[in-house]
Image (cartoon, rainbow, N blue to C red; front, side, top):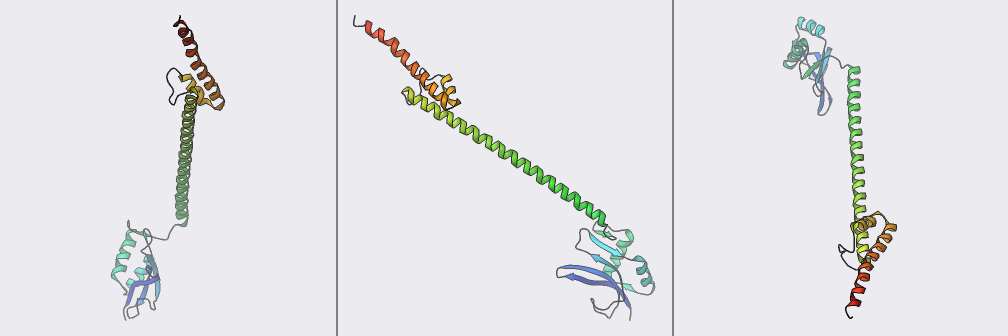
Length: 200
């Protein structure tokens, strides 16, 4: 019976990898074989092919016929691989360094994202604090206006300095209210002598 060089399927369901074996042509695909010449992992990125070309040449010299797929793989192995198929064993040190680089890049990205989030939260807190201060200032101004006797402060009754003083805090609100009351009393004092002169 002629000898064939072909693939022998290994691996779990939907996750195959293959051994390249020398087997009798009458043997089933995953049955008995004479020798293993290498393996092929099509699902890795890139696909990985390991093949002992010396033993392949020996068996071809003995009359073994490679299958179509194995012929293609032997051709790729002789060329040193291509963009889709890498030839040779995995360099574990290189793979380890590559994983370390990927992990370092991922951690740096996470750190930048955390810093950006912290800066955003800080900016939001400052904005909220400024809005609260503005709301308090407007409330204090309304309180000063109510103490002056009107719903809305007039230009004569409330000056800009008094509104600024109202925005500074609770203690200055009392000072601003006193200033407003004093300003309201001054026009009344100037109007009294004028009223007294009219009857005479």
